[in-house]
Image 1 (cartoon, rainbow, N blue to C red):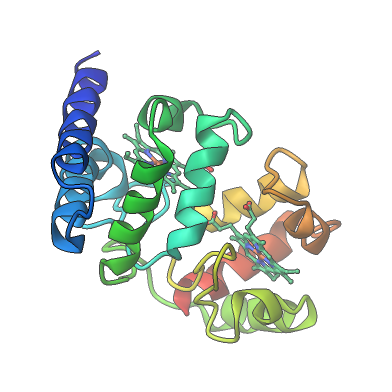
Image 2 (image 1 turned 180 degrees about the vertical axis):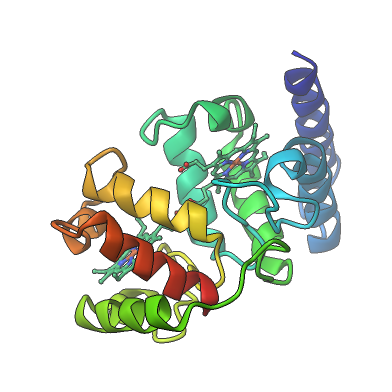
Length: 200
Ligand code: HEC
Ligand code: HEC
């Protein structure tokens, strides 16, 4: 419950600022978003949006539009993740956009516990990524665009789990593009792809 109360406080302040100054300066807007993010998101997604927790994705340097879209999917119950239910509940569309812009502006960094590169897994993953044309949508550097997420340097455990969730139809985006991409891959192939993407 404390978490929810803190969320309410943080969001209340954001709204208060917006009411005081309709043409809110960008700095004040991002200050309000930073406050919400530090109080309500940092415990899981890491201090500056770089996650040190298994299976929780980093948000630093992520595409703003992708973050906003996912928060709306969580809020509307269309992406079913119990841990994200409370944080997304009650966010206004404006707060969703502010949070997206805030995390997108933080410097991207690989997780502090990233392991060393395994040459065989990396090369296998690179060949699969080439064949499945990940770079067409995620761009050649895998840094994403608009609603297509930045995936390079993301946590390997999260990448593997989420690719399996797409394959097993346990996760859908606003469309089914990703489900089609990973259809029929084995666990071992997904592990290689996850390793390659995480090491980029
Ligand atoms: C209790 C832990 C927890 C808190 C607090 C939390 N999150 Fe999350 N969040 C998660 C988990 C776990 C996932 C990944 C779910 C999955 O397996 O797909 C996630 C996923 C996300 C995603 C999707 C990212 C992606 O790459 O797919 C976004 C965006 C997000 N969270 C934003 C936020 C924001 C903004 C806040 C604060 C308002 C927040 N989260 C607070 C646990 C948390
Ligand atoms: C046809 C375009 C397209 C191709 C090709 C594609 N993706 Fe995606 N990918 C997307 C879109 C769109 C999303 C966002 C979907 C959503 O909202 O869940 C996404 C989401 C993801 C995510 C979730 C990231 C996160 O933070 O939640 C991962 C991981 C991913 N893609 C990896 C890959 C890999 C690896 C490949 C190649 C094997 C690939 N994608 C090929 C369009 C594509």
